[in-house]
Length: 141
Image (cartoon, rainbow, N blue to C red; front, side, top):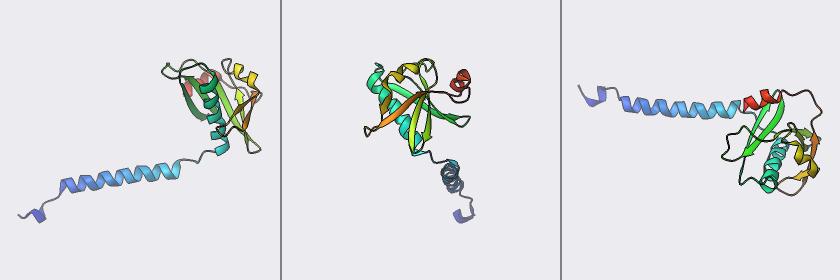
């Protein structure tokens, strides 16, 4: 029996691995919705503001849509993530608006606006939309 007649298991496994990886990238590309850049700018403005003003050595912010509302939950980096302000971000007329959702987020309202990384203002407001189950939203993070 010659080597040409033998099944090349390593070649087969390499090919299968490459096809799997290519499939994963294709799935991610075709199933990941592009995020609204206005929402992203509002989320980034929250993080930037907390870095500048929260008196935390570093900030971790998690961003996630829940029930069609874009939430941002931030906490001191290295902490357990069970303490921190919860915000919502909406696109209103092409500009981000950041809403304080829980009691830990309300102190940010004293600033009236926060800044995007380019220095332009982002409006702040207290949430007056539909009722939010804060514990339920935080459980999503």
